[in-house]
Amino acid sequence: MTIHLKYGGSTATRTLACPGWVEKSAHLPPRPAGQAAIDGSMHHMVQELCQREGTTPADNLGAVYTEDTTARVFGDDDLDLSWIAYNATNKLLDELDIDELMVEPFVQLIPDVAGGSIDLLGLSRDRSTILVLDYKFGRGAVKVENNAQHSLYTLSAMWDKSTADMFYNTTRIVFAIVQPQLSRDAQLWKTNRDTMEDFDHNFRAAMKATHLNPGDHCRYCPAEAYCEAKRTRVLASNLLGKDDLQNLQAAANMVDEVSAWIAAVREEMYLQMSRGVALEGWKVVDKVARRTWINESDAIKGLMKGRKLTKADIHETKLMSPAQIEKLVKKVKLDIELTHYVETVSSGTTMAPATDRREAVVVLDVQGHLAEMME
Image (cartoon, rainbow, N blue to C red; front, side, top):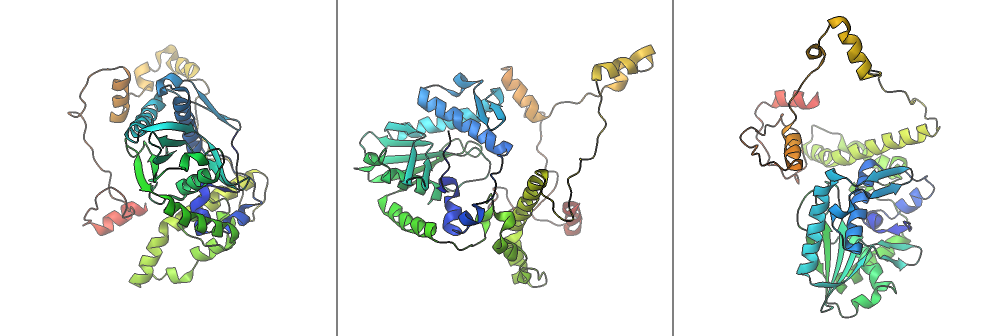
């Protein structure tokens, strides 16, 4: 059973940046987990089974993760991602010579208030190195250096009676993020106790503070749609002057944050209205109806009755995509080289953050590309 504390690892960055979010969210009803979160939890469960029981991802096919009323089965399509995480983990355990390993230990900095569950906590054979490992199964890159989630977990493990003895002779602490969507190897950051002491001071101060400070860290905050500080930041008039390059740059810096805020508001509106909450000027309606066959077999028989139409008349055939064929070839274990038949063609240009891995392109047809992007 998952234990939720007031201050946890997944919200540690937000707590440091905006301490007031905790009080602002205190009376809001819990939100259901999205499909991406459920998929990630299912993958976490499989990695836990592998390390706890000495199995492999393939051994756990058919394992079921359940959250509330949703069940997610670990299947063949999940194996590739799971094997990458599994291999990256074991490679790191060997490299650091981890001799003592704890899977999902629940550790607390302050009992019933702050802490959480560490995916893997390890101690090297010579007791000099502590490993704090976390799995991330999404595509959004997670920075490992000075990671607040890792820091809170490490600090909690240092104070918790169940794990404190692991830190007696350690001189090195290694943070690791295994994110198979982005890399086949773990990201690492090596630090020491001094860093943890600084984090301890800052985090305890944040737990006592109540001020609101909106920013990028608002994403996934349950109170984002209700926060007056966030609303004021988004609507600040000094960000709207497009004729002034400085103001335009300030506005550009806000694009992702504003978009995320709008999405959070819309999601919260729909969730509350679905529960019966009335919002002036809005209503919940059915999506546009699309005609579908009641029973395809009956429809085919009726259309072909009396030979008015043939099967070729009413069926469409289309070659599967390169990605689908590649998956099929791998599944049936055939050695077919696809590179001679495949090309990679971009459908056009779009905007992206400067941190995006793709190279910038020189846009010549500015008006044409702008019209295309705004469609």
